[in-house]
Image (cartoon, rainbow, N blue to C red; front, side, top):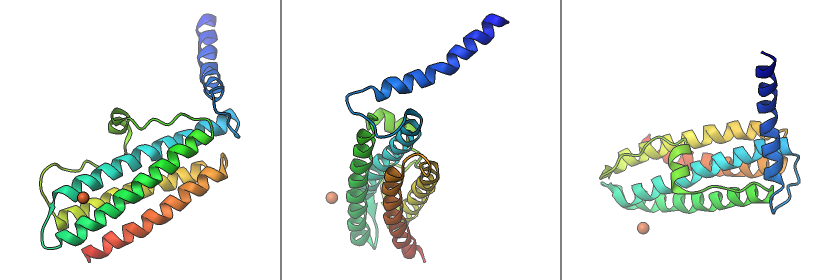
Length: 179
Ligand SMILES: [Fe+2]
């Protein structure tokens, strides 16, 4: 019994050791280990959502058909550009606080919170509905992370707020086409 509780205590200690080792990497963090862990996770998870958003928007850009093809096709590329730019900002903020970002395809496939986007041709209406759904999900997840980073890193939180503000505006513009 005593041995069991000792090993439990050891395993409780290991995450702290792990995070200290992470912050002992080549880039120093302005944050303590705990704040860096929480903020780094928020940035990493946002990175995965944004990379997936860019991929979904490109998939839709290529596969959209219908009466409003041209408008939707072009609007999707605006979303691609925004998502790619924000992904870069978020990844580089993670680096700045000493956290190595992971934007590999396999990590995105496992960790993105976006709903699946179907393969094949999609009508303009189907694409607009899907984009509204994806943006709604990305925004809801971003808002949770804005709360989580409120006490850990206001600079990273500020970046997440700026991204949410832009994506919420985009969400409105996509929704307006469904009315
Ligand atoms: Fe194109």
